[in-house]
Image 1 (tube, helix red, strand yellow):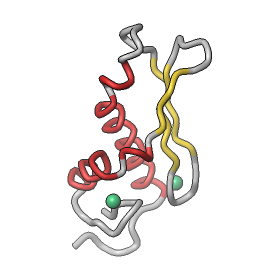
Image 2 (cartoon, protein in one colour; image 1 turned 90 degrees about the horizontal axis):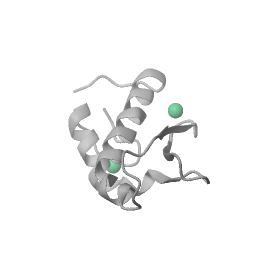
Image 3 (cartoon, protein in one colour; image 1 turned 60 degrees about the horizontal axis):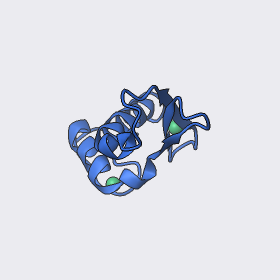
Image 4 (cartoon, helix red, strand yellow; image 1 turned 45 degrees about the vertical axis):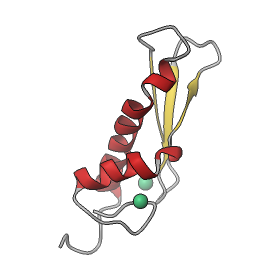
Length: 95
Ligand SMILES: [Zn+2]
Ligand SMILES: [Zn+2]
C-alpha cells in the first residue's frame, strides 16, 4: 500500500513502521479538559475525516503521554490504515 503522506510504498507492516518513524507529528494527542481522559486523533489525508479515540489513562501522572507516545502512534496509525484499506483502497494492484 502507499504511504498516505508521501510516495513511499510497501507492505502494510512496512508502511505502518514508516508512518510512526516519519509522520508521527500527524498524530495529535492531549487531555480532555477535566483530565479524566486523554485523546489521540489523526486526520485522514484522503477525506479529512477525523479519526479520534479517547482512553482512560492507566497512570495519573503527566508523563503518561510522553511515555506512551510511540504506542499511541502505533495504534493511531493502525486505525488510519484500517480506514484507508476500507474506504480508500489503492487503485493499482500491489506489485
Ligand atoms: Zn510517508
Ligand atoms: Zn478517509
